Image (cartoon, rainbow, N blue to C red; front, side):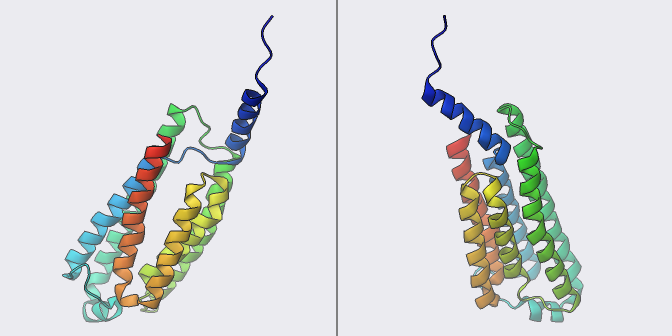
Length: 207
């Protein structure tokens, strides 16, 4: 006759099953590392186009008034950063889910995506409206604000570390709104360095 299963082991298994059904657990540290590196490389490219020192304050508003032909180039760089980060996040998370036999597209993933998408799409509309009316100085910090809100909104459906990522991005975005001439540098810190650190910590703890 088999021995009765240890009650603590049973509770652990029940907890794991509940987490898998209510939380998206496949986020990979490599997703954060990819997002951080792409943002840092993109920022360097951005500053090269602007011919700016990274710690030098700059009014994007004044720069684009003087160089309106550069707007499309800078938007392309921003779009490429977003695509690389998004594709990397999906691919590395999918790879982790396969390696650990975790569900990738379950109800938790769908809820997380919905709660992430609403603030992100709202922020995208606000940023596009600002571009349309020619207001550029707050674009970088506001993208951090809406991204931070999106991460906070989705954090309850995934691993706990994302809550602190969201808080950090939100606070950096608000700081950038107060000192918009350093908004580009703060954007690089948020999307680049913070993402990189977050990814490394996740990788060290979970992979």
